[in-house]
Image 1 (cartoon, rainbow, N blue to C red):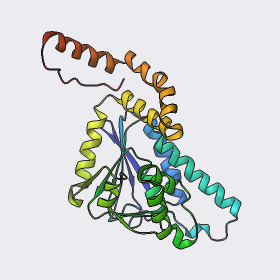
Image 2 (spheres, rainbow, N blue to C red):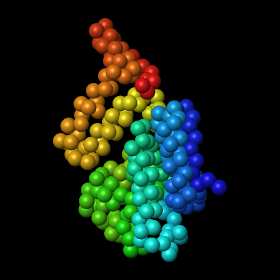
Image 3 (tube, one colour):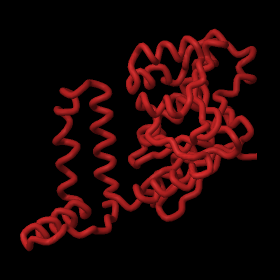
Image 4 (cartoon, one colour):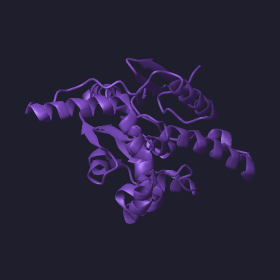
Length: 262
């Protein structure tokens, strides 16, 4: 039975974790995530929504198959997870995640790869790895540090504290905290809005943020024009700039235009 599914409708690709109640990230799910990312890339999707079935987003990795594996075999497994997560993070589309209930371990590390994080008001986040004597294996601790600072990342990793959604929002790890019953409605609406936007401009902003993450403002400045200048040749930019210039010249309000994503 599938642990993950993907559906594309109205140019929004919805990726659903559907192995409740814990939505553990087993090898099967990772393989299905890899296939889902390929399917998204071959579709007409212009935005992605990651969500989960059941009361909780994910308890993290499925540790049962780890028993008896050699260190080399475990490393190979974790590298596969990391490669799939990196592909997800680098999707050339806006990616939104909707988190409900518990979001732990690998589930948190997956959610942190999205561009926009919606969380239900009762959601809780955490790194349980230290309770097992291991580290966050998929980039969690330093992605928290990137957003919230080194000291807070260290505290949360050292203590496995369950962090409330409002605290995650306050420290820049969650964009919006919404009532639990409105989570999917609001995340879906946001994804639909992104799917109607200037997709290539969104992709450029993702690329600039990656450049900044890797090398700071100087690296982003160096990459800026190579990334941003091609936008001026896109249909969306030509239409947007032309309509804005005409409106300005006529002293009229700029019209709202429909972007095509190209």
